[in-house]
Length: 197
Image (cartoon, rainbow, N blue to C red; front, side, top):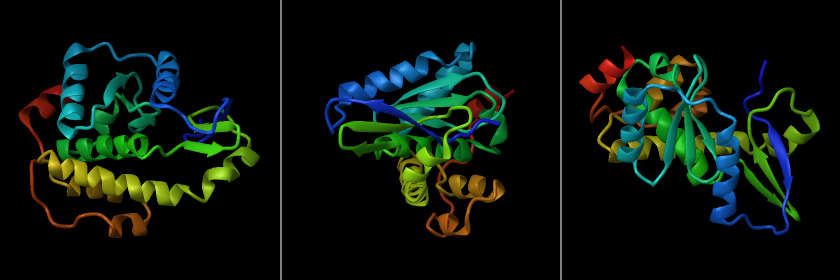
């Protein structure tokens, strides 16, 4: 089974990661992903990403399972099957914005003297490497949840979509307590329903 949160050490010659270096890392990781070959689905997901704002690059990849994944350099991958895992467009937008939050807040880029450690999915990650960031994961998730709910609401989506998705997938209660409870905004569009079909 793949570990979805693992780390991959990259030795760099400075303690800061420039925007250009971060984008290059994201592009390198994206090269290994297999694109989902459906122009209508890709265009829809890109439009939702643009509506959420922030200048992110959103790419649909093949895969029946998984959630949107943040890569360095404001890149987010969305498995095509995720469109079927959500119950409505507000859930989709909330989770897409959650992933955008991870990259916007630079979660997964841990700076240490002389090394940048990048979180990315790999097979069988060494436990000793994971321990360096495990303590920060709840903090990262809460911050990305807040970012996602706020971005979805600003874009006109029902911000409780993220809450509904997380509740259904059994997220920790402390995460749910921090998210909006009052409904308001768009839940689904006819375009979302057509793309799912």
